[in-house]
Length: 153
Image (cartoon, rainbow, N blue to C red; front, top):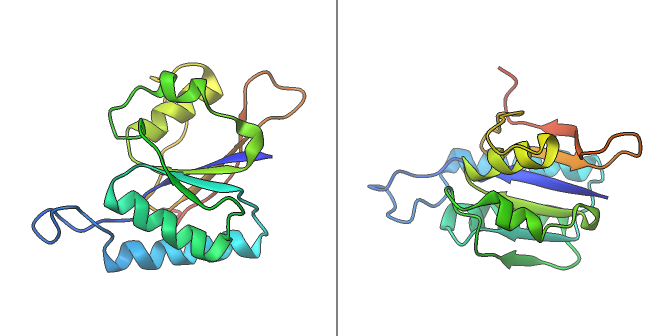
């Protein structure tokens, strides 16, 4: 049972789309990473995303490939500068939930969960990448179990 953290795919500029939806590259990278996750049989019960267009579109692509049993859910409190402590108070790592959102919120959430400190950067996310956080019996805090990123350089 795990928590999957996804930074939204690459987006268009505000001049191309005032709501900054996904770019062609953003869609392609998200489809590719979702396909790899599916190939590894990643099981997601629900995909929770911020209300921003680029996060919703990324979540929809992930859902079309990973088929979460409880579907998609937009959620308040996941915008770039929202308070991670408030959000984390209601987070259940044991539910196989995927979070699709934005920086710096997601990296601060990872720091809080893994180190107990939202100001401690422990992983640099990439657009469309997936980071899996999970609990292991011998460790107090959750750990980073694995990642799937669009590029390795």
